[in-house]
Amino acid sequence: MRTLYSNIKQILQIEHIHEEKKIVKGLDMKTLPTFENAFLLVEDGLIKDFGEMKNLTNELIADQTIDCTGKMILPTWVDSHTHLVYSHTRELEFVDRINGLSYEEIAQRGGGILNSAKRMTEINENDLYEISKIRLDETIALGTGAIEIKSGYGLSTEGELKMLRVIKRLKENTNIDIKASFLAAHTYPLAYRENHAAYIQLIIDEMLPLVAKENLADYMDVFCEKGFFSPDETDQLLEAGYKYGLKPKIHANQLYNSGGVQVGVKHQAISVDHLETMDDEEVNCLLNSNTIPTLLPGAAFFLAMHYQPARKLIDAGLPVALASDYNPGSCPSANMNFILSLACTQMKMTPEEAIHACTLNGAAALELTDTLGSIKIGKKANFILTKPISSYALLPYYYGNNLIEEVVIG
Ligand code: NIG
Ligand code: FE
Image 1 (cartoon, protein in one colour):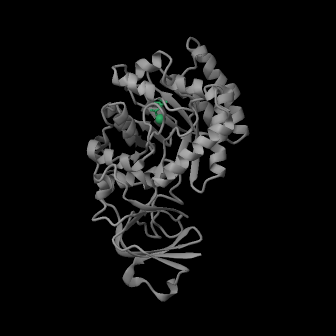
Image 2: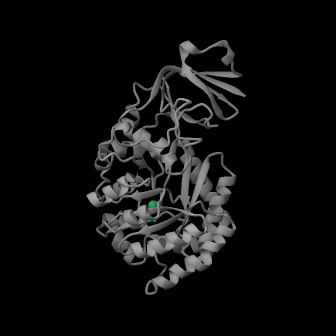
Image 3: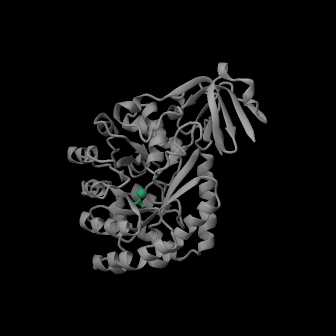
């Protein structure tokens, strides 16, 4: 089956066949490679060809042609950090925060992640799958064409396995790529509050072998933060994860400069995520690594915290990826279009930088650049077809409005 998209106003984030783009860093993020007045040919789910309309020849005859006058095409968003599998929303805590409690205070009195963990015990695996599948499909309709999903609301062997099995079932029943991260170290369950070592031992001795045996996870995540898991505890957990082939992708520096970036880099984490609090020391540490700083402005927005210092990182020459952090506590939205707007309005990223961060660099943060993240011959035909738009800056500009006409997956 060959489908030709013709008269496309502009194709964004193109990559030529001889290029091997793995990530875009620093100043390079300012330039977005595009083609104007273009065509795109899709065959059997892959990008077969693209180019300028004037080079469209008869050999490119297709089974169907879709006229895209005035519209643009860009790769689907890659959302490299979510907690999409959860049982219940937490809007009552949201109201508590409006009335003056902080996110940390809510967590300390047994709400927050512990609240979600309690609700996780009350839902069976099938129901958890069904609600998660609805959320996943809604997310894809918003333009997301690959996603990472974490466990972390189980906090027990049974609960963590339930979540990871649901993620595995989602993988088997969707046509987008899903990567799973094992996040038992999200917080200490109540029973282990005074005995951290015992919970860490439970993760290492009991959970990890089972997760590996059923091949349920791609990555190892830890919430490295004051009041959660210390750098030493994170160190121990990442070391153990490696023994089972799980590379680290961790939560770091959300609330404090808690050493998360340093321990992530030490273990060659694929990414360190959040990064609301960053000093020069953390920036320098990242500069000497291949670890990708991943910013989650949706969490800063929803918790009314200060935003991540995107300019500081990019101007230092680093790459930046953007992700939603979709979860019931700190960011109940998986809308990457809104993340794009937040990046531009609140973190002063240019539209070009933000589009790189939501596509190619997001794919890098999931080790998917061979097949996703840019419009390149041979890559998967996962792309967004916009409504007619005046320029691509409209995508972050017109926040809250839906500019997507169609999300094409394959
Ligand atoms: O990335 N910070 C830790 N974990 C999630 C929030 C989890 C929750 O509140 O349920 C985050 O923001
Ligand atoms: Fe998170």
